[in-house]
Length: 467
Image (cartoon, rainbow, N blue to C red; front, side):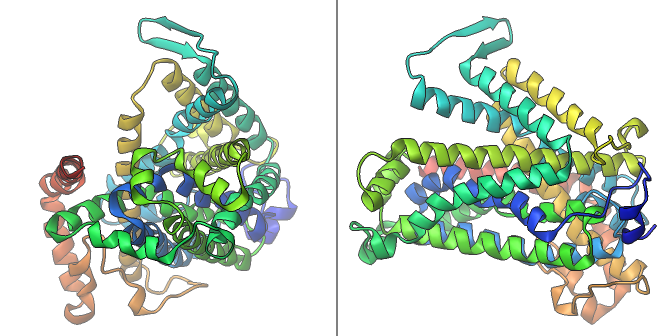
């Protein structure tokens, strides 16, 4: 069934192709708000120049990856799931376990953080407006307080919004995105209007910043830590079957990536010349209020907290939208139970949203470790990214004649993410590629454990030791 046909028929098994690129872009604007969550930690440890390089550089990597994901998503316009689908299609003819592993990792990467975002918003609201309300209830592993109640309520609210259709969720994101632009524009204009902004502060901090091999290790671990936040604009690929045209698909993926790079670079530059590195290191979250006061004057803490909450709300909205489509795509492919492969009357995967909501409500009340959730989500997400990129390579070999509405040049074959030997197929032929992948797959258990578990742990240990 073509996109136009799907848009005009009443087939409940097909997503309606009615989504505009501006709507997908609005949903992806949640990614730009992530800089307010953890940039202070990077600024305090790395200094302004390296913090900018890490955040803007990682976002640039994500924007380039969007081009690769665009080619494969356009190859299969009726398949939902985004990069999870890309990994499944790319590895389908090579190993039957890779696709499900990547798809599950991708779904966990987006869906398992709802509880963290919700409780973070609840804690922020309590600290700002209900500082004396310390009620909580504990029974064994169950712990319920005001942050947990607020977080659970927020998850339920955005669940109900998302299950009523992608257009409602996207419309809400447009309004929230407009509000999120307020702190972004204010901090980006700090070099012009901020009385305390100084280029010397931005540059001089590097004289006392990182150096040597330990600096390389710390910077690498920061690229790992921010990857989930900076690569997130790939979520636009998850709406593949819902776009009106392939032009909408193309514009959403490309503009969202470019927008995120520009926002991260501008905000990092503005903050880096406005706030001392030591101040950010001492209070990596609250220093934003001082930065706002330097630009606008005293008394804007509530405004900043409100804008930060808007960013968290956008994260809930986007995570529900993207994660549900990943799980729906898994059900369509037979990777999980087929009952999840149905759409509700609003033509969205409502059952898949319900699964994510129930899972996260349970994590809220059983006091699941947020660090463990974040590490697991990050590893699963990066695993999915890696298998999606290598899946793109396999599709170039296995389906060379498949229609490609968007076909990238050979220069886009990714040399990174540990796939440098794969890139050498341009010189050694596809036989070399196949031999290398078979060899690497035999060593997969040991290498995967070493690279995906031991290396991040070692880097984190070195990070904590250097701090």
